[in-house]
Amino acid sequence: MLTDYHVHLRPDEEQATASDYFTAANAERYREAASERGIQELGVSEHVHRFVQALDVWTHPFWRQNAHDDIDAYCAFVREETDLRLGIEADFVGGHEDRMANLLDAREWDYVVGSVHFLREQAVDMRGSPWDIWRSTDPEQVWRRYFETLGEAARTGMFDILAHPDLVKVWGPGAPPPAGDLRRFYELAMDGIAESDVAIEVSTAGLRKPAEEIYPAAGFLEMCLEAGRPVALSSDAHVPAELGHEYERAVSWLGELGVTELAVFERRERRLEALG
Picture 1 (tube, helix red, strand yellow):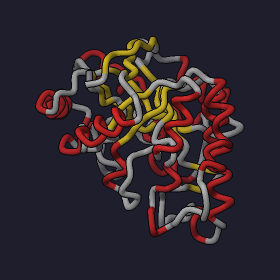
Picture 2 (cartoon, helix red, strand yellow; picture 1 turned 90 degrees about the horizontal axis):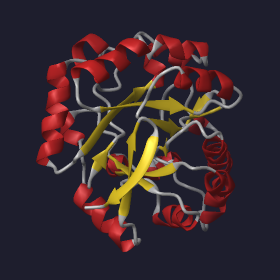
Picture 3 (cartoon, one colour; picture 1 turned 90 degrees about the vertical axis):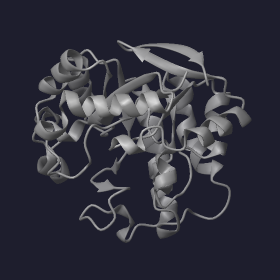
């Protein structure tokens, strides 16, 4: 079994509208790409901040700038016009957990992908934006806050999959990590992860980024596996050509770490299937 659950039907650009990309023809392009690459389980998980209902959760300027679509129309499209699994990529926003839980619980997802992009008002993956956390912040502080927040996100129980769990490394040499053994940061997230029932995403998206590494690093994934957390495999594709990106490499890497099963989801129920 191969899966790709962290998939977006449109690029991140604001001008990439739902009317242009939430179509049966576009969904079929993704389905065809998945079939070519041996991916049996395919789902979509659009960014929550693209939907107007997200403003009931948080009114960050970036969310206000991007929230144009109706989340229920998205759900209806996926359920009624495609055979894809229905997911959502929902940010963890500290202090707004109840509001996000209300938004998520009101819909029947197959799975919810939880991500940490923001540390308070600042973003870890928006270089050059007004919210770029790397403008002046000490890397040691950013990494510490990131993994503390990741642990909080896992502990909420809102998410089925924890997305790109060391996203903080995304810029590679452009925002280099602190010196020394990075496990001191991973450990900050582990209590929350160990106490949760969340699956850990192994994402090949990092190979397309300046980091040039799979998310998460082997040391972090090993700690998650020791805590009994299952693995969900995804590519974070935003166009069909990115679907299943570098999966041969990822499957080989997972085998080296002793991973033999992948998490598979339906109506928020998880089962494990043999990897391969």
